[in-house]
Image (tube, rainbow over all chains, first blue to last red):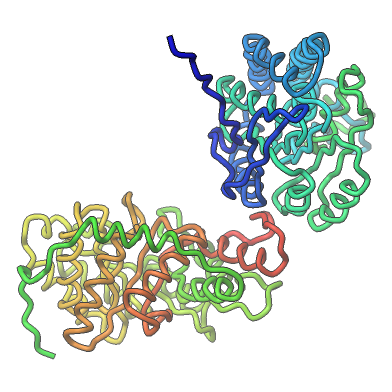
Length: 294
Length: 300
């Protein structure tokens, strides 16, 4: 019997629900202790452009569906990761991590998905308001998704990092373009395979691997990106984003806690960070103050 | 010029050869100054079009405003070549575009199906021309064409041409309904010999609309006629050309097939509505280095 040759996986990027290679044809080799693990796409600015176009196209189908259904889709992602638990654990270990830490990271990722899935249809119950006004109007405020959100995932985490970074914007109803961790990209690509089979509409999540500092200027200057969630702590990159984001007044959100296992990363305020408040003045018969206006 | 035309003279088209040439055109890439020049040229060749059942005078006015003010923050932009509307909106468009270089084109002859009697079609054409249209976009009778009644199709085009007077005539073949390249070639030859000033691929109402290979087949018909007679015929692909990259591919194809003489809006047009904004976004990208958003460009 001849020795069987393993079939190695080609790690590709994820744009518009498809798995293309980067248009640039470039790659880098990911290694651990001098041993090559995989070749990873080195995405280019044109991949960023394509991902943003796909996101914009997906905005209506994601923001427009019911919050309840968005919750179901996020929950489905958790179910699918559960089914691939062993693969994720093995990938984290291969990039350098103990078995315990890897299992812990996968568990936390699944729990975090459940946490944010639960918030989808509750965020407006908590953050929405009926406002008292001094004229005969029924005045109320609701939070709405703001548009395409660019996300720079944490560098030192693999699955937990990308999941935690993209969830608040997704739960809010925004499509996202994620720049995966350059050092630990394997789980990001496998996560894309999970998303492709989890009822997530194409284009809602786009995942690019590569050199983040090369891609950040293009993503943060893009006029069709409405917010940036930066989850690393490199002051030079933060400065770069702040300068580039000025043209269309992008919202910039910086993560405040670099321990992504910490439950401080489970907060509805992260969701409201990626929403815009819309206040409606609805004329009514009675003048508020002379009794109940609503 | 007195040229006899025999429909049997139309050559058959080398399908594999055409598609091979298109593959090479699509592999071309132009950058920097050449790209900016190409984008501006394409912008200047657009027939900004609205041909919807829900069109109103205000919709036409709005489009005419867009034709005159493509993107005012960008200095020295060319204007589009023309606006293209239904005959009953020609007067509105002429009025709105007074004093500008933008021409008014009108569809006519029972657009888009072309199913009506000849006298109605001629009347339709006259309404457009009398209202001040500079150009008339007619449709051929595809039903007659498929029946092999080429004489009827030829005579109809000739009659409409006569009704056009000074207005230039664009003949829409509706290639999406013709079936194959040989028929596209035959219809092109019929239109050209019957007096078309332009031949045009599509109404925009049928899929597929304009494609690169179909346009190349039509450009070849124009080239053969030019070699034979020395007379230039214009080309207008219409429908489905919505991004700048594709528009540049068309320009490359025209340059390589017919030469620089055709690279002006007198001889080449794009029938499109959303193409203008994509070209503007690309021009702004070249100027600022930043990818653009439709949020900052006016709708047509």
